[in-house]
Length: 353
Image: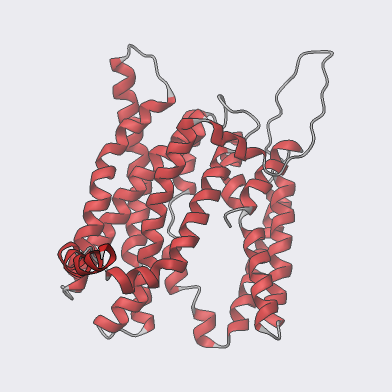
């Protein structure tokens, strides 16, 4: 889900299509899901899970593009808010596990295959081609070669690099917490797996409210800055609305880690988790809007900066998800600065000798 979106985005831009990308990617997802359901060994299952993720990832790069195709700039931001409500953590933790709980693992894959088959039919009958072609001067013609890594050229631009680094850090923090929740809350509070799944309602609600309010707050700051400049605006104006989240996100998760280490009240921890996701989504949306306004339509046509953003963000998140258990064993769930200094000082002295 990290690398595949930039390939889908490059294909979509090169061959001027959104609909075909959706249809092909969903077909890949359905076929790989069916194979997962009937897989007889773990290696085939792992390979098909990779293929399944590649098919699923098209929405990460094409979804926002379809919205920007259909709506003008102001309207697209509103629709993008609805597109990014991110209530999927609720269903992920409390609905999608039901087929697995009711029966065996393959039932979950059959459920997903049927669900996406319905989505496939909906796209065929109700989603037209939305790609907007750019008119070229009369008499001019050119051909370009399909380059699946063309979006990587955006890394030449410092503004894109900084946005991607920042959003990748935010996403990594979220995924570290997602991985640590089942382990910590089942051990510290003796909660069953079904109850641990219900805990994800708090961040899901935070995501939803953060998405709704984040867009409105971003527009409010943009109007204010635009008025200060006498009606002139530029995409970077939206970044002014990210300062609050830049302070609140690390603060909320730092306090969360300290209290979790002390086995503090569960409700307080859920409130902090809600606030962390709420402020993170408000913060992240400002940069998503900047990517849409400043990179895709105008400054960098025929490039999908949002796909590149998702690519690096998911690669970073996947990496920290693998390292999270090792990091937690070494650091615990909060920064033990004094304990680190006490343990590291003798080791440093031995190293000097």
